[in-house]
Image 1 (cartoon, rainbow, N blue to C red):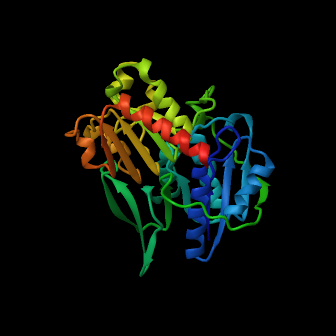
Image 2 (image 1 turned 90 degrees about the vertical axis):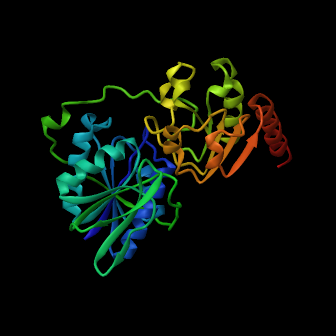
Image 3 (image 1 turned 45 degrees about the vertical axis):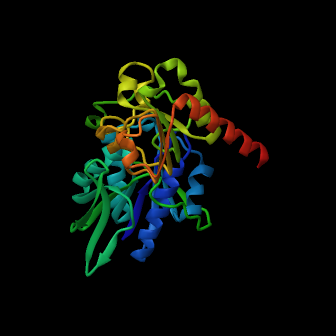
Length: 325
């Protein structure tokens, strides 16, 4: 038996969340005294594929072809399931990204596997029981899920597990699967990625703002602070609904759920729907002139003050720190 990790790529490269997932999968493989195999779908260089060996993958299955160049949920799930069967993998690991959340349940059906999406810690195995800690209730709580099936699918939340380099280089081999036309009923013709911006789901630091900014013309200081910190920018739902910022930046229960190491909320009151999308953040900093804003109840650090006074001072302090470093 073995552990299989699906290594999702973005434009031919692997992001930090994938290195976390490979490190997580390696730890599970060690728990079970078995080997770790990775599978990559799409156009990725041989060197990039082999680099997964630094994090514990012993072999990488490379799947390429024009039909599979862009993500297709049904087809990708079929390919990963076939790879799991070929390698005798009873545990399949994914990163709980947008794609991973779509693949996990499909893989569960194809492999007759128990599924734990939103995992945040290594599974425990006591007396034959396989339990996984995962997020629940839109990230407001944790659940301990027991998987009793022979096969298991686990989707790891980004930024919830450390990257561990073990050294080495993985053996890369081509892998092909005969796909069905029915797997391509819905296809992606083109993916347009934001250039020179930190991806919001993968960001370790997020700078987010709400209606307290009063208008889109004031977003310059948010983008400047984010740029200085190497952070992604985000916003509350009312801001995206008003057209001040794109919907791709909307964080919350009905938007993107994030789990950065640092979340800075500026001029956001803290509605329950917004809190549900950011509750997995490790450290939350709130800047708001209303001392009764609900966000302060969940904040690790808070500043009661006008964003137009506080943020420029914060920017100046970061610049001063960087200049002296």
